[in-house]
Length: 112
Image (cartoon, rainbow, N blue to C red; front, side):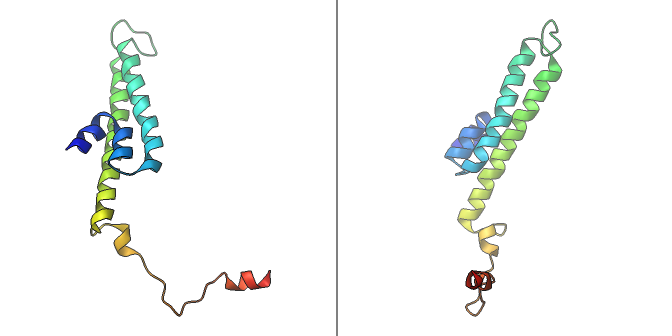
């Protein structure tokens, strides 16, 4: 539950702390920061300097925040599937090389 709340409110922290998805944390941070800045900028009038709130800018910011949150939740779900060796886990579908297979780069290594 803690991971779900963190992933929704602060997606980069959720990806790093609960998802072990450190390679996803950087792009998630970009989307989330874009969303936060857009919401704040929209509340101040937006790019057209409207009097009051620029709802299009706020909506764009909320959309980007939502994308970051969904991405984080997908990262959390993928990590959990890997831990449990679920049906969709890539760890469950790896093909192990057989013992009699030769290394295709062996010929190149011998030539040099």
